[in-house]
Image (tube, rainbow, N blue to C red; front, side):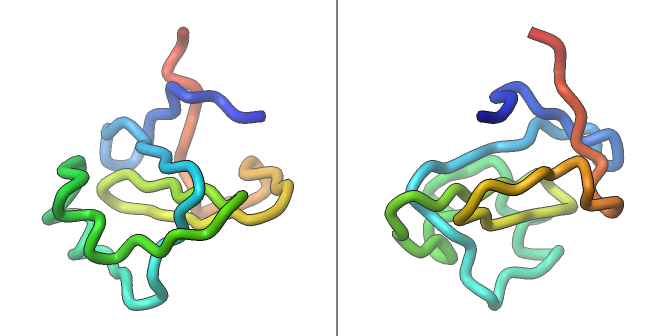
Length: 83
């Protein structure tokens, strides 16, 4: 279970999440910087995978396909955006 109101303190952008998708390995910083939050543009690098979840802001992204504690990833600057 995860907060659906995550916000990145590095780029001050809302973290988007997409159920049943993963990010293509070719994704890079400029792709997200130029295309967030436009879903129509993001779909170009989304891969359908049942049970996975793709997260992204303008400066960071993750694909998760098993239970993972995102707080252990030091490079992520994602915090609860307060409900």
